[in-house]
Image (tube, rainbow, N blue to C red; front, top):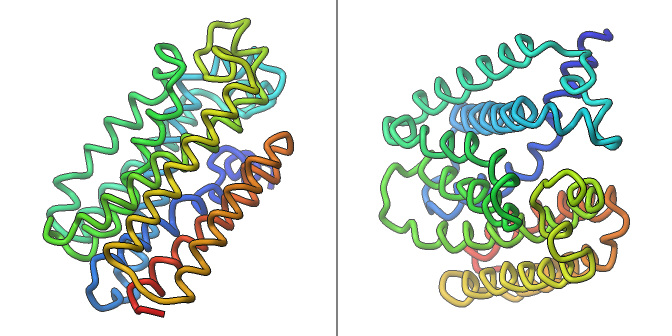
Length: 280
């Protein structure tokens, strides 16, 4: 049980909740029939493999930084509870799951699968180069709705709506990653880790976070104005705006702002897209 707990804590499958709603929102934007159960399972497996691979790469590259940071020093790899070769096995298994699932979906998914991988490899080094690392992570992560679209419709025809949702993803992720980075402001500044809170201070970084969330909300307004309709959809749009506002207000409470509110936002965005397409 302790071994299972170690691997469960390391891969943190629950964090997939952030990306799955946007992936399936992209599926909806393809405007095809709802995919078969087999396709749904393959999408979930590909998303899980990809997220675990990205997280494992980040933990491997950052293991020395994690060991120095009191907040992260207890992590399996940083503390020595997990060996580097074990993390390598997790990475190999996750990448195998990702590529096999992509291949089973359609040839275009397999052909494009290396593109996110390049981003996953690059991301851990962003924080060593620029305080705008949060935008870099947003760009990497915004592949989610486009991937969902292409999983069920391997064509660029009609992809524009998924790209707009990807723009939402860029700024939503960047905004809440800044909030998450507030925890490590002093540590990052002392150890030359580039984050916006370390570079400009927490209060100013929160201003940027609010601007990014405003831009994310603007992308959803564009999505509604061009592709959606319906009164209930407008209400869901307003709810997303409120949740983004509450996230900013709760920035000092990381479990609430980063995890709970963002998980809720993801699912509300999915229903916003679904009901918007149906005209509700």
